[in-house]
Amino acid sequence: MLVASNFMTTRILIADDELAVRQLLELVLVGQGYEVALAANGAQLVRMAQERVPDLVLVDLMMPQLDGYEAIRQLRNDTRTAHLPMLILTAKSTLDDVVTGFETGADDYITKPFNIPELLARIKGHLRRASQQPVRNPLTGLPGNVLLTEELKYRLNQPDEFAYLYVDLDNFKAFNDTYGPARGDRVIKLLADVLTEMVDAHGTGSDFIGHIGGDDFAVLTRPEKLEALCKALITAFDQRVRLLYDEGDLARGFLQGIDRQGILRRFPLVSLSIGVATNRTRTFADYEELSRVAAEMKQFAKQESGSSYAVDVRSKDGAVVEERRGTKLPVVLLIAPESPLRRALRSYLHQQGQRVLEASGLLEANALLQQVPEPDMIIADTRLGAELWELSETLQLDLPDVPLLAIADTDEAAAAAQVHGFKLVLRQPVEPAAFQAATEPFFHRQE
Image: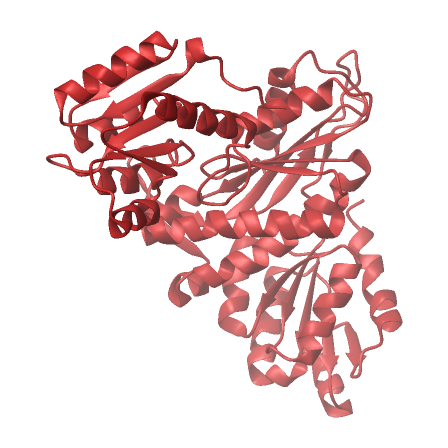
């Protein structure tokens, strides 16, 4: 779907500290229809490449201020230039020099004095391969914005129905400011992994995942898959992102930092907002309109606290058939030490399509309740003992409408749970059918 660059628009950036070499290469390449830019050292090369990204780089290894090795390394580490073909021009021809060049990130090398026909052939070959390869985000390895645009154009020209999920992180800036960009990158990678895994599990073989840039991602899937996919994304991400927080911040349930207006405030934990546009009930003039609608729905989803998704269901004439905010996933707070029981309960709840937040004890449970002030149900393991009874008293006062379900290992524990306000009690071992019968009615109270 990507079209090879026309030579008349292809820009080649050359860096060499020898004026004669720069002039010779400029003369040859301009004569072949390329646009040429010249740099006299590695530092200038990096700056020029970042200011206006070329299509290919020719770089001498031995230059003042910044040698070719370091210049290539910096360009490879920059998301704007990481994908570029980079060719070494060098008078050195020992194996060690070549190996070092490739390890730094070079794609090919040409020794001086170079053969002009060979040089042109190598340039054409690398440009051709670059034009045929999807430009991928270097952090996540996912297709970038260029390929996403081409994919959107392609799907809009096909008769098949599809859904476009615009996935964005909430409160990511606060996380990045608190923990630094290295851990911020881990959140980005986590989201990319979750998208890949959940699309594999809940999508179709023709689904597309793209990294728009920063903390923005896109997924293209079938309309009938979007509900299950959004729920799975939210459940998986909410659980895993907690592992990237320091224990104290996780216990508090928020980060403290300066907002964009310079005001000190509390920021909730990182969550997802997903805006969905689909051609199931309407048509789009072009990919820009499609992207705009998905962005609108993402902003609509952001009005809810925590992870959420919203689906545009306007008809072809623009009338709202149904405005559905897919944010009201039933939320269950599961309080139990990590154990086979907790894993089983988690599995049961996921099968019922619930969003599960897990806490090992009182401290984590209080932190989670700051994020989700009123879950649809709280399920607790009675082996927590006195700690659980203390929490239940608070819950009955603050959340009288939230059903409490206790999982008891003995008759004595079951009786104690009822005394302390648990209206629902199940004995271990918990059977899936009994668990579903006890819990499912409460998940429909909001519908």
